[in-house]
Length: 454
Image 1 (cartoon, rainbow, N blue to C red):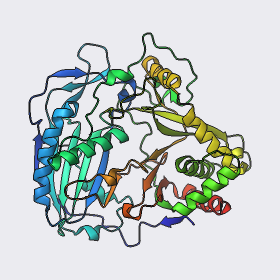
Image 2 (image 1 turned 30 degrees about the vertical axis):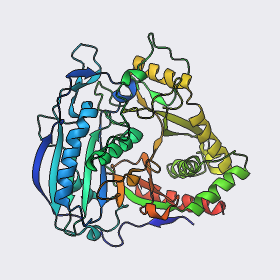
Image 3 (image 1 turned 120 degrees about the horizontal axis):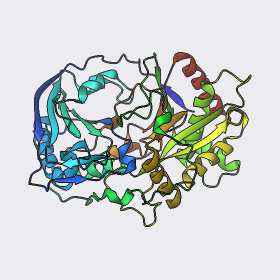
Image 4 (image 1 turned 180 degrees about the vertical axis):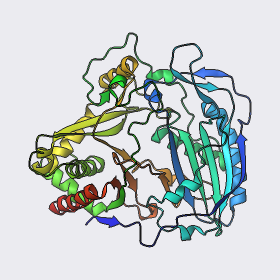
């Protein structure tokens, strides 16, 4: 039965006592052409930074100082193939008003640091420890904004963490995983595993744009609260209110029970993602309500990302190095979320993904050309479950754990893989951040609905 991973047992280290020893810029290993790189309408709305942390245990043949040298050299080489990453995000000098990459070979940031702790002292790597902020450098120069910054932080035991910040306009999850695979290959003195496709014109809007579907999952820019022309505004704003964090762990057996319940209700081949997302949607929507009385007619809209590479005609290359995900949605009343069978909700999530055909995706891209909007819904499920960051085989071994640096947002629920990939299981951790009263409701509902699946 699903469990809660409590982050305060043992107490979290509040200060990792990190000292920065060196900050530099890594340039491409050879000259690359100066050019302006087109960004799709999907890229345009993703002008915000994403931080990931990759923890590694000690390796006898690869102490941290050797890793620093290998990683710096590999980054210099890979910037030749991903020249845009060494560039800068600017407003198109040609006057279109769009964001573009100025591929100017200005380089990426590289930081070397150390902690006074052993890696094992850090404790639970899964729980969102605020001290992990110290493992990622966000700014190296007030007057310059690299699209990527890498920080290697060594621990006293010989283990280390690689903290990576990238602007989301550079990569989605799948293309970032391929970037890491290529980086690991170059660090091992091997050729690239995937030749990146850097042609983002493949996701350009049609001329003229043709919006052929309604898009309730999108909101026009001038309808946003506190609207403005700042393209760097996040999809969901950070909140200043106090949030409780909890991680709900679902085992392979829990997920199998949920899938069986959905399939017994008529869903054909219920996937793990659709089933877990339906459970999370039910708990999140109902925890935000005022109780059963008077809440039945309230509508809840769930958002989640769908990879469109294989859904387009012709398909995008799998090595497309950019953002090739669009927002799918499902909407249900609180009455259906509370009293309806799980199979109904799983089918709605499944239908939201199935809706993302070539015609629908092209319509959504054209919608962005006309309205410059953002995703519109009650909350977003962001899945890192099967991206495979912990499967990347570096010369110094696979990560002990890989995760994003968690944001202070109650309207994004994250799905993470289990910490031990060697177990070859399909466990998933559901990270939820909510105000205390809503968290108590979420927790109660989570266990109630999970118990019903047994």
